Image (cartoon, rainbow, N blue to C red; front, side, top):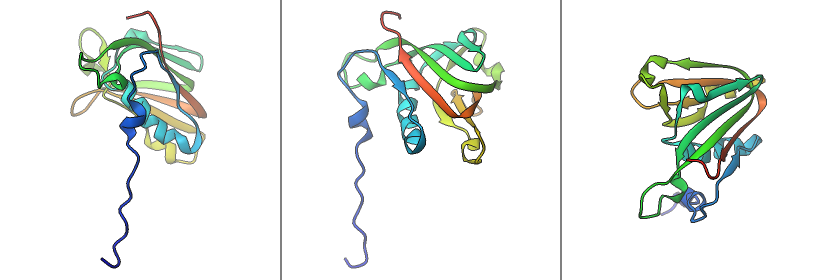
Length: 161
């Protein structure tokens, strides 16, 4: 057919994400053009992770969250998902706030559905927002304002469950 463009075939994200390697990960989002792409990976690593509100620790401009995450990167295993202790480290943090905190429940446990960059990333300022969002129609969110440039790192903690 004339005038029809050739269909673009994109690489298979899963091919690069899935692994048989059981070693703990240490993943840091890169800056610049790679940042949004790396957040896709981070989102996949953190999906279904959980943590208690009391495990959210801010020391100056460094935020640390101890959590349990499902190892989706090993999903092609037939014996189910594996769980591992991890730490999410975000720096430099300017501020943070919980939205709809009452929906977390009596045990104070938060389940991560998604992690993404808030709208402020496009505002051409020196600030951005990292959002951890829970499940539900109006999900609980932990909204973290960071100074740009910033770092988001997820590292597994070997030997802990």
